[in-house]
Image (cartoon, rainbow over all chains, first blue to last red; front, side):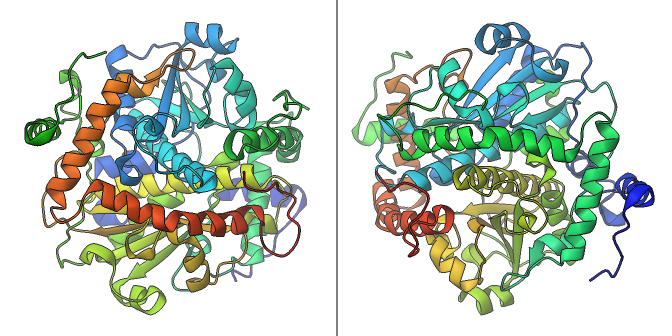
Length: 278
Length: 278
């Protein structure tokens, strides 16, 4: 309902970039001295890291934040596969993406707890949802803890074949038992680019409602898409948001088949989906 | 491989409680002055709140931490349904659980982004997984932000019929469109009980591996279950962990059916593209 028209062409592109660069966390003046809050609200995903190594005890402390995250009935339905540059090379091949120094793959894991209790025997979709939810809580807690230690990070779904879009491939690489689903990899290091601009965020009024569900105004979504497109182009001059989404689309069908096999037991016995890029 | 025997009976119960009370975050001495880190590692789920109200600007700042959470391709696949005591009464009936002053229901929402892009048309399980993951990241970021503001919280999956186990009920109460899945409610307030003891957490070596997946030793899981059982009994003298799990079991089948209808389109009259339950 903002009434602003979506301009196209170079002027629209420039206006979208300006809006991105003006993006700031909204913090009431009375709370601006709260350093811990500032750490959380000023966190950014970083994709360029220095060669500086993360000390072992600092890395262990980041994992501690994952270990101590909340979870449904305290079931802790997660595993953390940790990597140095060397162990990444051995297990997954190549380098940790973005020259990061450490990586933690986050796995939604109900396999472990099945040793001692039967909570989810016949309800795989609830089981999967709970496990993904809890594992993601742990991932965010780790990321924020890293930030308090001056360590930047980014969560990957695809880059380096280390996230949900390569779930079948990772099942093989890590020899995962049933009920263990890799959902993302967090790569960590010291930022080489300071704090990047905030990516285009939807306004709070577009994502919050009270009472019954409220649809987001279409103009708000179009303005946001224009910012997303412009922002992607500015940071990836040789690519585009459309090209990137098309890349995801090319993999997502195989990921869906692999995930259905792993979560719902579908297709077991039929020729296994390969997990290879289509 | 700890070699410790699991004792049963009253002595085992007492030992388990002692282990719970000895539970502390593991923080290297060199990092103990880091206040923001301390806030994260000392966060606890709280279930008893004072009558003190949360100021509007403080609550808005907590939501801001959700708005600024990271998400896959920055798609922000979440909605936040916010509640005061009054709007909870009107929308869901009764009081916010645990006498909390505010509540935020977290919804995994790909409905909104479908207005402007087609990223997930034929891959509902990947779509759901991505949406749950992102919404959970927002939930954790909000919870940690609240903690920095002195506000405690707990995430609910069942209590007050406000989480994943009542997904069909909530779809009705909030008039949710397709592709909007409530996953949990965070209830917030000022703690009336200080900082409760840490619930029994698995040791880091049980949840972390490097390279191929490593099974957790059965003794570790049995010791943890003994602590879980003892801790639950100590905090809920009239109930038991087993009774609580049996309560979940009684609801989880209906939640699975509702979730399959909402996520996979099963049982909705049209022959779903998805396969049938195992």
